[in-house]
Amino acid sequence: MRSGRSQTLAWKIPLFDTDFGAEEEEALIAVIRRGWVSAGPETQEFEREFSEFLGGPEVVFLSSGTASIHLALASVGIGPGDEVIAPAFTYIATCSPVLWLGARLRLADSASLKNPNISPETVEGLVNERTKAIIFLHYAGFSEGIAEMARFCEERGIALIEDAAHTHGSVSGGRKPGTFGKVGCFSFFANKNMTSGEGGALVTFDKQLAERARRMASHGRTAAAWDRFRDSALKTYDITEMGYNYKATDMQAALARVQLRKLPEANRKRVELVRLYRELLSDIPGLVIPFDDYESSANYIFPIVLPEEVGRLSVMESLADAGIQTSVHYPAVHTFTYYRKLFPELRLPVAEELASRELSLPLYPHMGEDKVRFVAEKLSEILRTQGRN
Ligand SMILES: Cc1ncc(COP(=O)(O)O)c(C=O)c1O
Image (cartoon, rainbow, N blue to C red; front, side, top):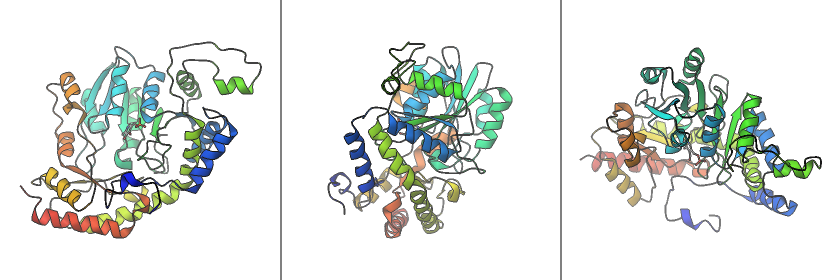
């Protein structure tokens, strides 16, 4: 056990554990010693490396995944009078930026318990002449339906924005998620497949859009601090549009660069652990494990859908008694108090069923097979004996 890691020790098996080591420490120290800690050379290097990793899009490194979704919507011109379709079964950050921009949020249902992603079928009835964008979440790192959604958007002139917060390093039809649509949005939050503590990236093959997003991330300025430091001819700057402060730091970029190098091996380990989980849980009656294509997934989390008659809370409590941390990804957006007011009548049966039956089991690359076996055994035992109500 490494020192200084007390917050995860309360759990025998935490839901997630970061993998930071000597390489991250050295990278951070190097940035601090260099003396330029805000967005600068390290950020540029990370943007170049992440672009290469994704197959060449423009990359704008940002302070969070939420910032990347906000800027994606802003840079495709979403505003009052526009409608944006997004999944109801997602993290709230997929949706809230739509409202910040004064646009109308339309929530779409998941395709099925087996495929929690949205699909052309679940969004079709929501599309009208005001629909300017659709946000597609690759839930848990799975891209099922993304090619169909890209086609659907293309045929209708709708901007496809990918919430790729769960998909670092996965592949779908030979392509990296985040590059199917107009803009891809990544998060590097602490529990993601690769992390810079907080952080995000906006990716796009549209150079103009990337430039606009980069400006908007820096108050709408034509030249940021690092540009002016490098280029003595740039004495001042102009503000050419409304902007925000969504810049990340070179310290975050240093962490992200190391984590990107570790990502392929870390994702391979996730695949092995998920294979074992799936094998061990395959015989539980009524249990659904979403998706099948786990070998090409980023496997950000390991979600299961509990049998219908099982009380999820009691299962979570029994697992907690055994030292196993679990979580729910996610409550449905329209069922939150604030959003209920916006969608008082909305019913989305699949998203609601997923939200009430989904359970995320521990998963992180260095977890080890013994812990997977322990969790699977405990869960099977609980479901046999005390999970039913
Ligand atoms: C699906 C999804 N979208 C967006 C975000 C927002 O990312 P961040 O926390 O980096 O703002 C997250 C993660 O937290 C997420 O899981």
